Image (cartoon, rainbow, N blue to C red):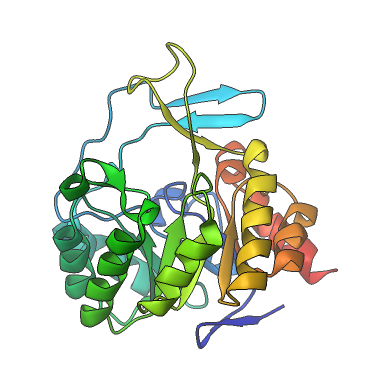
Length: 278
């Protein structure tokens, strides 16, 4: 069940979502990553980040809250170790790199450093990060900030940009239009939904993922597909092939599995197989 996404062939439409599979080697002994369409790496920032204090995850009836805080080894280690490992060990699965930062310059620095690497099929720009120049408002929440982010990343990128947007936006299709009109080739829909439960997370609040996110992501995908017509990676709440088909029917080309893979690491391979068998 191969599909074409932004000019690249994927052997199947199932990806591992950013933040849930590290940089691949962390799960290599459990999951055959090369049997999937691809992997979206953990977020990469210019500097190493330790992340938020624990506890960082908390389950609830509808899914999971997480406040990891973009913990990652930083750009230098990703360029020298993590991406070369993926290039050497994946033969068929594609690699998308999630990019994050506190300023536009942070994103640009990461994209500029990594864009020459042949292993990368696309960059996933995490537009849900707080923009320190705008008092902490998310990049993806305001058209001018998003336009600047995408435009400047596009100037240094030789790989397609896919912008990941929040389901909490008042008009997600409008922001997808902004991303498209300033150079993005696709969008990932959706990121986690902000949420909190008293005393459950060290950070106090975090992002909601898991089954509760499914209808938000499917609706966002449908709205963007109908109003904007740009390629979509459907993300959020996928546990089964039936869930994945909801996204595909709504207009997504690829789907990304996150929380379900934390509960059952073999779920993504099973979903890919089930999709192939109809």
